[in-house]
Image 1 (cartoon, helix red, strand yellow):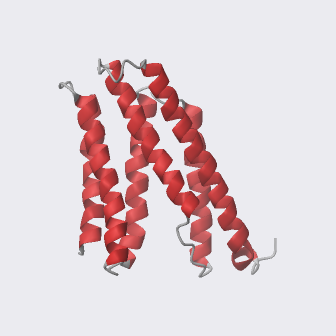
Image 2: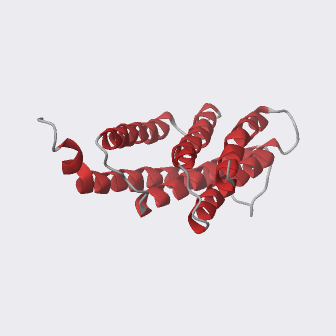
Length: 191
């Protein structure tokens, strides 16, 4: 197993403590959760960078990396939904877009059409991670953390906005991909 795949595996393993620490009755548990999630997010940046720079991308990594991202981010979205940080509608909107894109991606693979990661997808992921981090910061502020004398509700609103931007950019990116490869995928089928 090469270094990028080890980093991806590390990110998957960090998911469990990143979530469970949020429920533990220990001092600064929310800040510790932010730390776990930040480390996991950094491994996501590093594994792709190392794989490209050292030309050591693998089929395992191409499959495992996005799956691990989904497990980490979706688990934390569900956790933050449960902890009343995010409303159900925004989490559902993100999940439905992800399900639609995943189904489309699988259809593309079945038809030997390769879909490369694009900039809207990277921006979507950046805003999603930022929204989750800010959502966790909101939890820490509710536990008494003082951040520049801001009120926690303003921080929660920033997290909402980040998730909404993530959804919109992801939606636009998916539409761009659809327009580019739609004929290659469904041109073989009668609809």
